[in-house]
Length: 244
Ligand code: ZN
Image 1: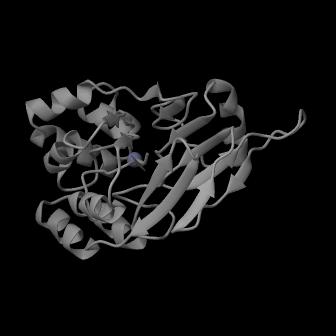
Image 2: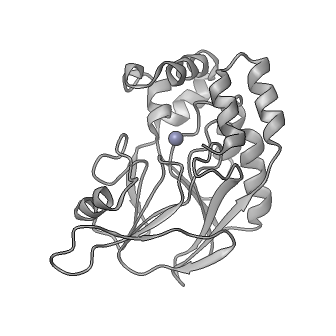
């Protein structure tokens, strides 16, 4: 049993296709939110994700902003521009699909949340202190999150006086044995922010409790050109090659 765990596609179709091709066969897909925003292919990405087998799809902050469910004033100027660009182009059927998604749920004994189990739409789990307090906000053995675009594994604080989570930086092509309890982030498909521009994904085996973490290269420059042709913010195009 293999579950493809992916997050933050951000309308980057070439990155998504590269991940699906590289991942080989899998039985189910858990997508942790932010299908749209930043990238040039929102409708194409939603159409492709909707067809994936046994899909669980979360709602991210960019998805919610495009739907008008949260105020896009909370975004910086360029991200807001991208939200408004996407809102004008998304088909009613695809918007309806996103509306059916929620930012946090429990599936097969794993909590899935876009940002964090405590504040699923907005909170970034970027450090071991913030991760530590979030262990009180889910009951399953594991919580899988996205949102930061940085692959990481946080271990529950050990001992009664510990106040920081343990930190594991997964290495590409490594298989990590998960132990209860952990918060795990597969990184971002469509806009990595760990200075590695390659698309990130993981394969989770819920029986063996293994987390296979991978990166795959894709044609970044052609996505950048597509974004420029469409008049999307230059900074978002540059981020793709910087991996930041
Ligand atoms: Zn995101």
